[in-house]
Length: 612
Image 1 (cartoon, rainbow, N blue to C red):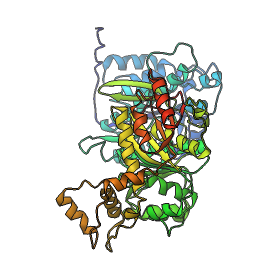
Image 2 (cartoon, helix red, strand yellow):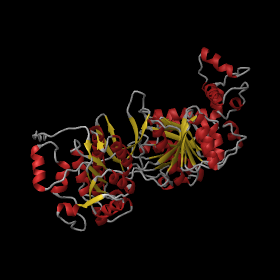
Image 3 (spheres, helix red, strand yellow):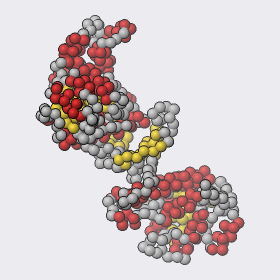
Image 4 (tube, rainbow, N blue to C red):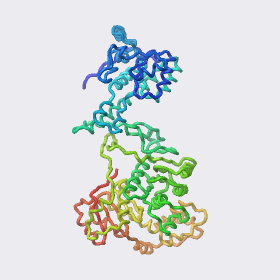
């Protein structure tokens, strides 16, 4: 192991009087007010170029760095402050006799305050600057002064953003023109974070310009807001961070206080609905719970029967509202307390539907004014409303840490559309337009479902999502049970359940599901019966089976290939006619033969969609 450098001795004092400041800023926001304050404090200022001109206008005593150093700015301004008299004044250890003697010998003035911000490199990249332009916007002198000042925080305060000017002026006013040690060290910590993020931004960009990128990858998490806790209450601290150079998030918080899991649901659901709207050309909605969709749908009009079953027969249903009603009714028991995503502006009709549902929040690209007021009033103002930015493009690379190790991968930006359904491998070839929409819907939905995953769709809505199972056939069967429950909600006996007056909407949903499932113990049955003036007769298994035989034209999509025909056999029992899967299994021919035996149409998409 290489030896380390020994500490340089010097005084460590709490209060340091600001008598000399070095000010060199690209962003001159707030400089007038700051200059006026420094002038009033009698601070001697060393400065450069346009910054010096602006400060003199405020009555500041300003000495040009070139005059102070005896060296002019050269090389088109590339070299201004890179001089021993500048960095010596910043780095000198106060109270160190040797340092003080050298400062006197070389005419070096001690600097107590450095105010610097950096060339806008990220903005140059964002604007599409060519290689030479981006290179020229890499700041050299600024980071050097910032790092030097932060290193010598015992004596020097370093301010790197106009957002810190108010804090600086308050600090000096409260301390007789001085800065205290805690303040200087807080500033130093912020300064090193800034230069690290700046260098990381340059490094990421440069890696994309060369044939042999560095094996070291840098990513910067910029805290935008603290969170109450992480996944669980004991996981503190927790924060929401931006990872783009601009510091932008893909949304703004309009109302409520989003939590860690809320936000995971929101960003996944938003991506799902965005992709679904692009792929189908229709409004899309998703209902998320614990980072998987309970349901998703597109704005295909409801039938009269669906209006009754979904309890919206007297509601105004726009295409956007219809998409959400369908998404919520894929599995309304699981959607209890969901996080909603909508691809289009939320209109009043949609807001009124959401108002009566138990839900935690919504993300959408916009809200009609009245709709926004309806949603902001929900849950006494605690309902979370996020306004998504449709123009936001996530970084190409994704970074993740698990158990002390890091992972990097390209973001899954593959769009599933009609082109993925062209490779039909079964004897049956026909895929009607509605079936194509359903296969696209199911495939995009499972793209954002914890793997292994399988999803069933019919009529523009998911009707069963099987998530997170180790066995694919278990996913198929789990989701199929949900399909059966969805279909049986249309059974006349279920539709006619005689609820007593006053039973709440979600209690009716849950009661219908348990009636369909029918596996209640005596104590549960007694409690369930309280929903009715007269408890209904059970729904017999033979009756359910007979009703389910009428289910047809169901589409199913799998996030990876079917390894055996057992999944197709299970699908056949729930009305599946159309299948999408990546293909690539050694048992592909067996699976194709199974589809042929049931008259199913299957497309190989050549696109695996694992999500972890």
